[in-house]
Image 1 (cartoon, rainbow, N blue to C red):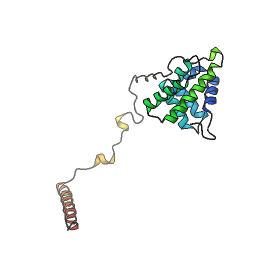
Image 2: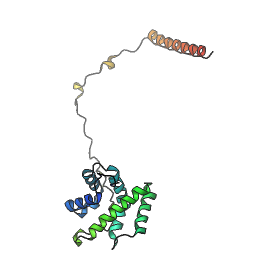
Image 3: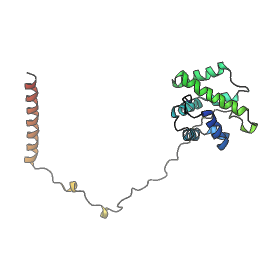
Image 4: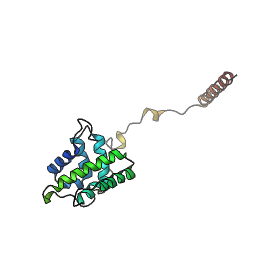
Amino acid sequence: MSTIAGAPDLVAILHTIVQKHGIDILENRARLFALLRDYAPGDLRGVQVLMIAFDTGAPARLCSLPRPPSEAERSDEAAKLVDAYGSSPDLARSAVEIWARFAAGLRDRPPAAACVQTLPVRPLPLPAAPTGVQPLPGPSTPAEIRPLPLAQHQPQSGFAKWSAILIGLLVLAVAALVRLLGFM
């Protein structure tokens, strides 16, 4: 995660996003995820692990500390990621390191850019229920409806029914005979 040569620096990307869109972007998970994917299209795995850490509330906890997080606090955050989502310890540690460096960068800024103190995850509102039934496009009166060709089909005669049944039984008998002879 962002340790591969040529991979984007996600800390710098996070600072750029906050600078352009304001600190409130950290409260909108979907928008933050979309912006991270736009700024780092080649590091989807890194972005996804960052968002998993975001979902556990790691950025809010790291930002709320009055000082940079200690090694034990970083390890605890990484362990929470591993326990909650089953991510690999290395990826979890990388995500926590990125969020910790991001939080340290915010501490160096003026108070107007302080971290969000609450967990940034909010449930999305449910869409409103439809108020009425919408008619399907197409003919609206029975006079405009034309019968399908199958609707004019005549029922089979008795001879045709019995012929179809006998042919089916004959096919089954031949299949059984072939199977029987094939196993001898």
